Length: 329
Image 1 (tube, one colour):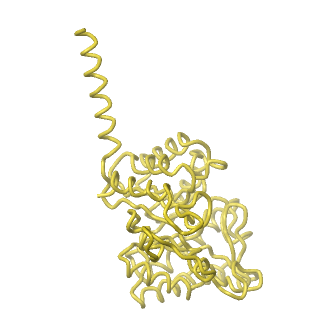
Image 2 (spheres, rainbow, N blue to C red; image 1 turned 120 degrees about the vertical axis):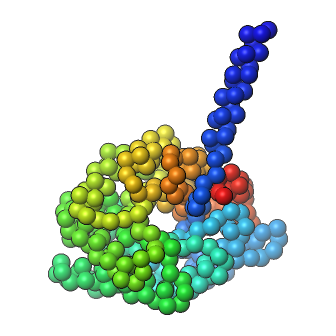
Image 3 (cartoon, one colour; image 1 turned 180 degrees about the vertical axis):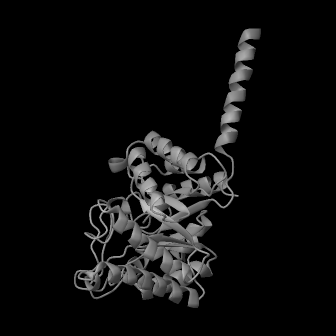
């Protein structure tokens, strides 16, 4: 009996200790969502509700614990081969309107430059049509000027982003073929031009380098080391994590833990959809006192959405209320 009691007390201590580690709250923790589709959804008449009351989707997300909104911006999405031909969703003007809504709700704001007229990701990084034939010096100038113009107009209306991505999922490069990752010198120079454009407007936004290597440690290290060796200065390593491409949750945990210990930069999961609770547990339990967090990609309309087809919160959204209470100070 005495032996069993000792074992019981020991196991109880382990459970309590483990629970304490899991529930440690994070200062400046980020619980964010990329909802760049929202203006398009609203233009189609989509509405959102909470407890039967129609509300701004962003307000509902805030009520459930979200504190950050991410928006993508394209160069000329209204172009014939752009993301939104003739309509221009996710251009600078649409972004400015969304940024005002974000700040009016007291939320923070991450701006994601794709440096393209359409989607940029590891499988495609098309130059904007107007930049196609530019020389390398002219291309760098265009990156710097475009970045500076977008940040300037956002600053002038009082909605300067709190964080800025210079490129989207750029582990295979950006602005192909000039900035492909087999020409790392050119890629790093282009990214430096984007960073320079930000710094000419303000030193306040945190600079993120975004790669899609959530569970790939070797690839992550190779890319980040190459940038650091070339003098690229940034604050945050942003990772995408989709299980079909980036491995298991344990792969994610091992990679992010290593990156957190290896580099001075903060590490954030800036895109994901599945395994919501597991991804957030990994991100918020990383070692050290750095900024930690996540940003789910398009939860209003893609993947495991947090609203049902009628625009009402589902159990996935309730999960975020729990995550917020558990991890955010």
